[in-house]
Amino acid sequence: MRGRCAAISIFLLAQTIAAAPQERGGSSGIGTVNLPTIEVFATTPLSGSGIDADKVPAEVSTVDASQIQQIRSPNVANAIDQFVPSASTSAPSGNQFQPDVAIRGFIASPVAGTPQGLAVYQNGFRFNEAFGDTVNWDLMPTVAVRSIDIVSNNPAFGLNALGGAISVQMKNGFTSPGGSLDVMGGSYGRAQSALQWGKQVDNIAVYGALETVRDEGFRDFGGSLIRRFYGDLGVRGDGSEFHLSVGGAENTFGSSAAAPIQLLNQSWSSVYTTPQTFVNQMGVVQATGNIRVTPTWSIDGSAYVRMYSQRTVDGNSTNAQPCVDPTLLCFGDAVTPANGSTGMQLSNSFSPSATLG
Image 1: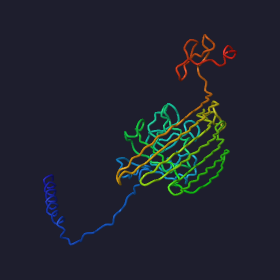
Image 2: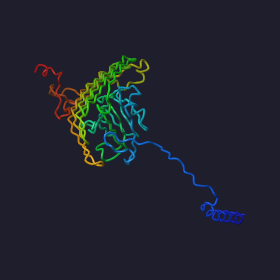
Image 3: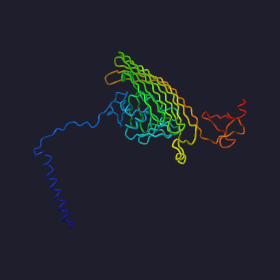
Image 4: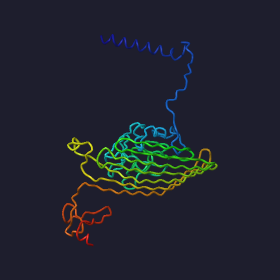
């Protein structure tokens, strides 16, 4: 039986080899068929770089201003969640304006201590904060965003870019002429408005955007107040373009955080500890320039000054207690000093001696 099977296999192999030259010879008489060009996907230039996405040795996803407008959200992170594959958002702090943005498991978060894996840039300057590389998405006016590019990891993007980089380009008077006013409201005391206006006169263009959001939140002490501004002045010449932009924000949040299920079973609006509030303030001035030296060479430059301040009130209790010296605070006992962020021992502002002093 095995011998017969081997003979049959050898016969089939010989027939295949004998038929192969005839098939390759094209003696069947079938003419050449010219198939039309099929474009699987189109490439777009990386915003602000002038480089086509297909020339970047990495995967590139782009979200433009029209897509951001579709979702009607004052949070730019929601646009990334909706239109970027493998992206998701969550709110570990309990406030929707302080989201975590995760792309393939790598996170850009406003929560200090989170292992940051994404580098975020706005108009070319690093948007991650200097302390902890946190990303405060609330500081970015959504209405003024022209495009968002998400690029896979590359050492050129600097620190904490293991999961890639998010490059945000803002609008200006050349790219976004005209004006609009959006006013919306909703449940839980939501009221938001966005005003933008751009104008080009010859080689000069101006643009400005103002955005405000007020939201009481669906949980107690979880309200938010968002106030953001962005402006740009641009000048074009023969093969050159320069911009001076300014931005500012002052936002207040109530972060309800997690609560025991027994408490939430009584009411979904319940909170476990309060107050937990954040006040974020930011101001930035940036100057950018582009000079085209030849049709294939250009010089880009950017300089900026940025100020950021965050104030936090946390109602969670600690083991801090008065020391042997009641004007100072200790941790866990009366002799272990409780040091602040500067390394100096914290003073006990509730001490009678401190009050008298």
